Length: 404
Image 1 (cartoon, one colour):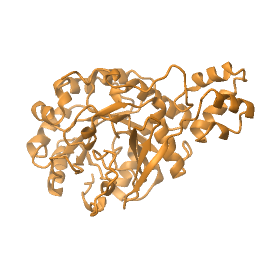
Image 2: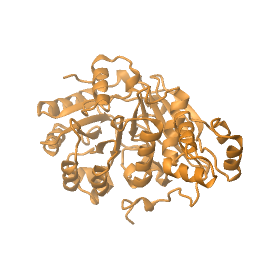
Image 3: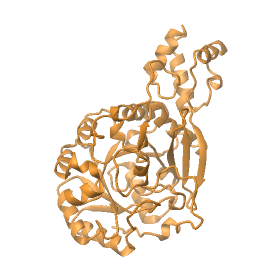
Image 4: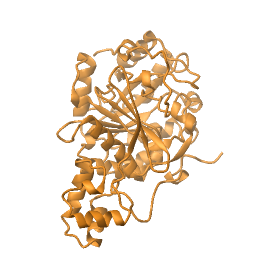
């Protein structure tokens, strides 16, 4: 079997020699278009504002541009590139799963969680403090609203408990397609950063660090263009160690989350085949070397599978892995789906696992499942359009979140 985890060239990136859409272009690239057209330089900022802040869907809607310039852009085949929301599923808990289609017929899923899922709790940022308040008090607060964003069509990492893995990987998303998901959801939800605070988690379909350059360009556009602070973004990687090192050197970057899911190499290799390339020793070394900002913590994600990785012995091993790290751990009870052979653990097992971690001084939280009934929860994204006739129980009745 070939190495699927080396570079983003392992799948086809959507790149073109000349831009055909404005979404995905940064200020300098738009300035080049403006200069080629013989227009004054301030037009570049007008286009940036129209595309990323006003979220126009067509060039003709950029009313700040002269009609002649708009016509010229259209004649050159340049469009905004605004994505099409093909389907929209709404959960009983208010979560919305969007099926977003692209021009080549491929599609990805993006999820809106109006109250978040508590994933930022304890990460040392303002977003984390807001999530902690919600975990304790259970109050609705817009500042916890979260968009879960995809980075690839499908995924190459092949985690055995994840529905997305069943799709395989089709291709990388361009920077414009990544940003496009966010602007489409913001427009539909009538949310406008930076006035409205919203969190972004790159935890949808795909492994962001296998599409690193496009992902990082999208991050910069989301900060500079859309107005989302980097401190309100989190990216999750399955453990692409070489890119963790690169990511730590970025001047503008989201917070880092690492998908752990096992307490020893034998178990992790079984659940996450990429552990053969980057084992726990390499992964934890990268985590310990990662340069953290003041108060920042690395987040580790651990999906609990009944009878597989949820025993007290596993919790004790996790304690040893994280000992001395400025880190927190999010526990996620498996979100089930067709084709997944594992089972969701009992509430008591989740609570006991968390208790063992906390007694050892590890900051551990239980992420609240959101959108289980519409296949929108963590690990459930597989472009499902046929929903079960008997929906899952309301998420708040599924798992407790232990305080303190």
